[in-house]
Image (tube, rainbow, N blue to C red; front, side, top):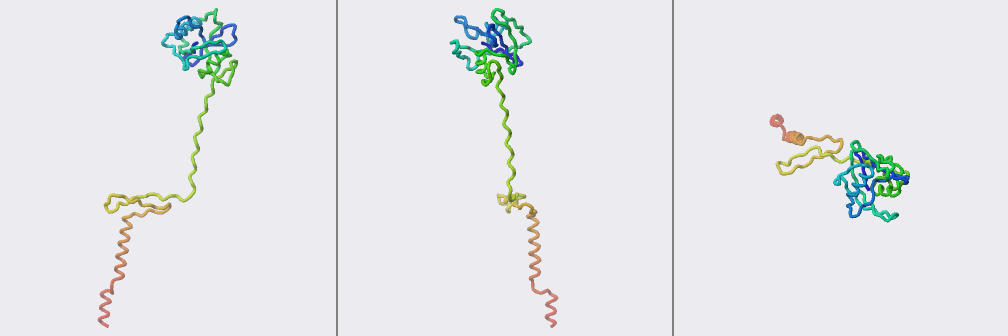
Length: 215
């Protein structure tokens, strides 16, 4: 049997009287015939489509056991340009042949329904009379962003001070809302305050000493 598809991803099905459902083109192997060659021959005989053997590939798994009729079905697939081929139905075996979209398949025979289900083309939750393609799972929603934790904000690194040419850098931290003081400006302010304190603590000025001697 052959899953014959076109470039619009439609599937070609045939109806073989007296069966009411639609099925795949295919047939029985001749003695000592290779399964791939048999698939090419059956498609040519039933619907008049010529396939190159190299264009026909087995699906995986290729062999499917049909316990109701005690036979093994070998399934192949091929893709053709539907606009460049003309279907010529063998009216002795085939009532009609037609392309179907995968989401608009007709009523199928039971074996064809099971084969298409194994190929992943119909949902096993449907029936041969009302086949449907498997539903595409919806993508999972993205996880919601976590809100920021409530509490004291961490200290922020706002600058760095080189330690006298030593091969390291000390990070200077400032609490939230605290202005960052320039380290160089801070050192200059401390030196000025120290000089003013030294002048204040010195002994009396020269003018004071003169007054003591005059007394």
